Image (cartoon, rainbow, N blue to C red; front, side):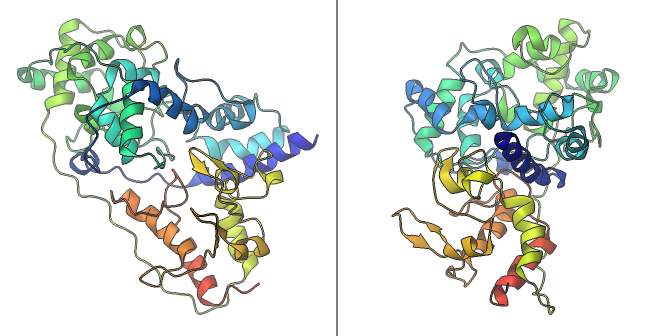
Length: 401
């Protein structure tokens, strides 16, 4: 009974993250730019170890992944809730389902072995951006080194023989087929005016924005995947649509070579002024820390017995003992790289407290920047400006109870 109760509490904390609006995608020009020069030599055997270290199986499936313990199946729990398989009272499942509706799946990593370019994958691991506009969550920015990213990409996307891309002359026919086959009912294609679904059909939540495809995929493999996705990648969620080889070639040409209008990077929302009214701990706790932060930063009893990645470590991060579950805990700070306690309210160079800086840095990450301190919440859209304003006001007022 105790384990079940803990699972309910952890899920309640996690699910609160799921009702936030997804961040806009970055433009392809900035999203595809590597954040640093990548090492020339890859070590695929090390990449296998990185799959375990960075706990890729908590969200993804794939033949190279060892399934995680049931208590660490992040995406799997969401799917179980939606399907009614999760061990919880019906009333809880009813409450949770709307919150996980946009968090039910993550792409299988098997697709990387056939479709993805290794250089793009390494760059993406270092500088993730929003590929799938129908999902709230995005790939988190983990603590990989450039060598880690190259090794992991080599493990996931082995070297393959060159393939021939389709002819650019097929773009007009591909545009016609894109409309005729209904591709835009699932896929966005930002910058072309084609494919702008606001709500995808059921099961299409993983449909990526096709703007990024020319950067991501091995060009000569795309037409085969379009023609028969599951014969190429058995775990693919894209359905098979009847078409000829010539039609799939034309669609591939349109996706790879259609002219793209520039898309400006998303701008940060305005930073709201400090409130004049009093803001106490209960309000900040209930609107921010309990609603968003506790899943990764809590006492062990709140997070499947380990306190979450921000408390006890996980996803490649060391345990920082950062507990946001109580007023006393949040005042006690966290462990730095040297194992020394550091206050969350220590000012940075411009005077911004570290806790507040982490929330603001998530806005910078969505804009395509790579601040040294990871933005929070990890892998989710930035907090609304009103929530950040609340935290900033509470800190400015001396963190009253």
